[in-house]
Image (cartoon, rainbow, N blue to C red; front, side, top):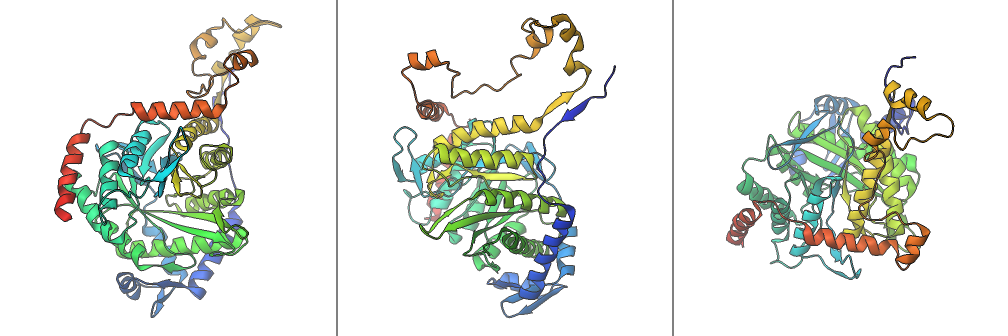
Length: 474
């Protein structure tokens, strides 16, 4: 018997084709009958001259033909490079890619759990952690630096990021006034950012249905420089979006389509990455959080973007938990396994805890392990004559052993996942080691990685050149 090789590979599918069309129709109805508010004069001028757009002051309604035009002009894939000019991945036709971040106000010590204000040193350390951990394909702005002169925090942030990793960067600039200077700094350090770009600016409109001035103006500036952008909305069910998941998805999808139209009016063919962050609001504690339905909506949005042939960026499962603890890990598993099984393109914001206010290195390190296992699960396995190895089954026979089989000798090292953090302890060994807690191993391993992480060879030169540039602007 000879078999044709096949791949057994799990997949997650959320939406039926008819449901995709239904969500799209609801989104078009929202855009054409409710419309959006646009607070940017630059954006309003673009909408004013567009076909299929109606404008009344700051109120803009977008007709289906304008959306269909934008869907045809926007690129379906985006090549993402590292800062050395090497192609890293092709977003839109690749597997899910993960990054660490994003814009945390505080830092949590991996040994003591003590929380302190996020500093420049934490940005340096966190970026190096993202550099050495293999599951992360990019580094997003990890925190808001609080120990530098006022008006320079975002400049020092991009400096430390580019000096401590060669991986692609997703940059979030918290101070609007520092956005253009931040791009100027990166161009000063690395030349023209267009083309083989390693920098992806990230922007949030305001839900519900507002393209705020800061978001629009920064996005238009990035597009003018030839950069791909992430346009991602954040909603809270029952507060800024409707309480039902269906209505939240339709509304937030409409907002993404409005951003898409604006990007293509700015420049036809401008690369844009779209996605939603659908959170919930606990009415008793007034805390924002991700619910399992948030992850379901993220998967649905990924399928909508795949239907549109547009690159996608979604949730990263962060925010839940108090450190790299059980609640945090549970949400990471749910997010990362569904992301890898489904159509999620980017999950760029791993590592935030305590409501996404605190950067937790232990959460980053444990999530690295989760991502690797999720990828292993979704890779699947081959079914063919070689993988079955019938001759070895015959040789072993009933009650036999495969310990000495040729396939075992050849493949045992990669046949299963081995954690670099947690040893496999029997009951006896666990007792011998004093009944250790798993968190102890995680904390120690995280601290070891931080201590051993080295910067790129050009680190000192980049920092010196960047600091000199920043000092001239103060």
